[in-house]
Image 1 (cartoon, rainbow, N blue to C red):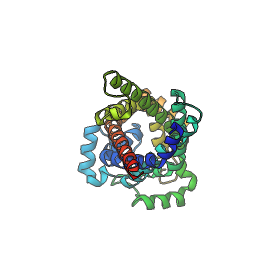
Image 2: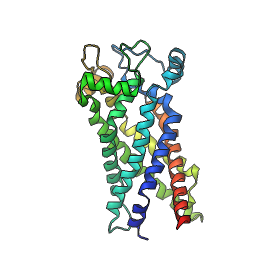
Image 3: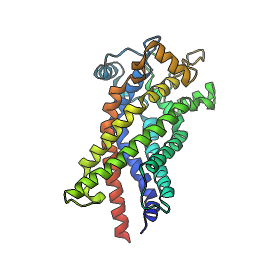
Image 4: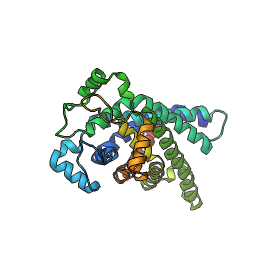
Length: 310
């Protein structure tokens, strides 16, 4: 069977494995996501959010003052968005690789990059409204004026008060984030995976994916994720600041991405673009390991089941 046929056959398996991986990831890491979001938007000036010293202090303060509900604020859109994002990402990524594999024995690093970038852009367009609602729910505190009661109330209120265009606030940095982050992560993952397989083949352990185990997948996922985080984190800060709820008089805190960049650079310097990165690393590096362990093992089980049925 050709490489092209192989990719076609496993498209739905990629989507299923990706969706399950995303669900496992967000359940494990959501409290750190709440902390990260609150750090990202806290610019040291006027803010409705309490000030936190560091990640442990933020977790403790939120748990004490808001309880479990505060730590899991925005959990429903996070599950929805993450599950669909990972499922769509792996599906679009495999579709792109399918096209590029036509008349080629294998993909070059540049084509892996192009496939990941294409998938990231499509996912961002599909899921931006979900992430906007998640961000706003995570930023709510007990002192919030006219708080959203949940995901559906937030959607209705945003559409009523701000119009449908508000659902796409933060889309530009979101597109940059999805395209560059995913491209860096998946390119690093694919190239490191080849290197792992090559090293194991030289050690006499075989030269296929079967030679990799869950520890290898965890290391690959963590390393590739860390490289992507460091490279693209400022886009996350810009997006979160744009997605804040407007004040009671309807005036947004930031007008556009350029406004965020100017204000952040002026008042906070380079450090401002990396606020919350500790919580982000603690959340995403282990989560990436879990994601790729689940993804690769689910994919292998689905392939094995399909082969048994033939």
